[in-house]
Image 1 (spheres, one colour):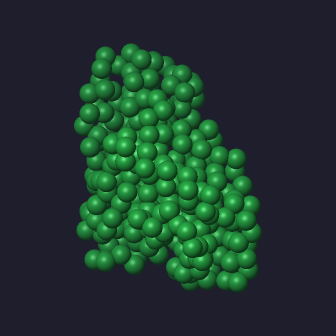
Image 2 (tube, rainbow, N blue to C red):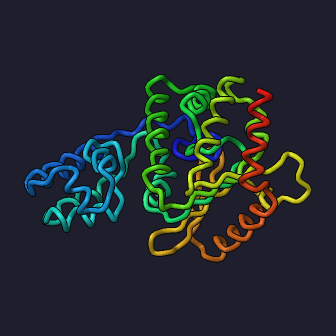
Length: 285
């Protein structure tokens, strides 16, 4: 599960969560934009000075992206904002479309040097197509309203930009083969999903491995897990259940999860063989 608590390690869950207000994000974006105008900087010039992409700066100014702590500090320095941005950032407690328990992890994702994901329930949110994600949201119980579905879908698709906006981040995904055999949403949705995942898997910073249905030894039987490395080389873990998520900072526990993930990497198919299996599944859909 992830951003919305919609089942699937990245798409699950908490269907009772109402869409969160984005007023604070919009207000923060307006403050950034005002100080940028005061400094007589274009978005392109400002983006270069804070060392973030222009699309990222645009998303923050439009209130569509949660600013990282690093962005806030750099913007404060570049714009000489008298502490205004730091103060405004402290009130950004809500993020539209994201379950409350996922927001801390989502903030760290934006700056991660490495992000490892093992999923056995659904294809992770970062790899989902719009059609696949929409089907997950439509199938949630209690049912979501149309506005809730659109808010959560927008949050999911926006988050996926990380894969291409952060080419220096190493992404590793270990996915159970049966996630594609289930044909969630039907054959057409599954075929599009497989094509999408194969297209991402050829990028240099993304590694996708499939865990075969028949596997006598499996180090991930305790369930889905994510591991993340921060810019200061600290590692954290994240695990999600039906209606809650657990942020893991205990170094001993994180070390154990690393050990399990490393073993799963050796037990799963190689990236090359995984692509071959995906092509085979695609041909049978």
